[in-house]
Amino acid sequence: GMGSKDDAAAKLRFLEKADKKLQQKKVAALAKELTPQQKALKKLSEAMYPEPADRDQSALGQVLLEVGETAEEHELDPDCVLRMVMIFKNHFANTFLMANTMYCVGMMASTTVAKAPQYWSVLSKCVIAAMRYHQMDKMVLG
View 1 (cartoon, rainbow, N blue to C red):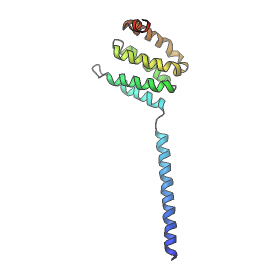
View 2: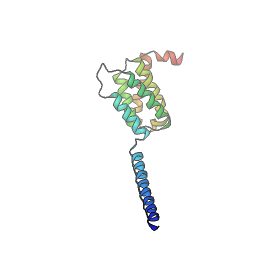
View 3: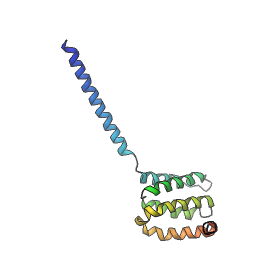
C-alpha cells in the first residue's frame, strides 16, 4: 500500500540530510587543515622549542629537510626566515644541523627571499660564516 512508499521517501530524505551533514563536516575539517606554510612554521616551532641543551638534534635536522622541501614549492612565512637565523645562532658549531639549515635556506631562497628582505642580509652572513667555520667552502668551491 501507500505506507511503504511514504516510508521510502522519508528514509531517502533522512539519508540526504545525513549526507549533507557529512559533506558539511568534511568541508569544515578541510578548512581546519593547515596550509603548507602554516605546517612548515609549526614544525619548525615544535622542533626548536623548548630546547634543552641535551636535546636530540636529529628531529630538528629532519624538520629542516621537510621545511626545505615545502619551501621549494611554496613561499613560506617570513617568520621561517627568522627561525633560520636563530638556528644558525643556536647551533653554529653543529656541522650536521648547519648543513641541513643551509639546504633549507637554499630552498627558501627562490620562493621566500622577496618577502623577508630584512632578514636576508643577516642570513647570508650566517651562511658565509658557517661555510667558512665548517670548511664547507672547500667542498662547495673545490
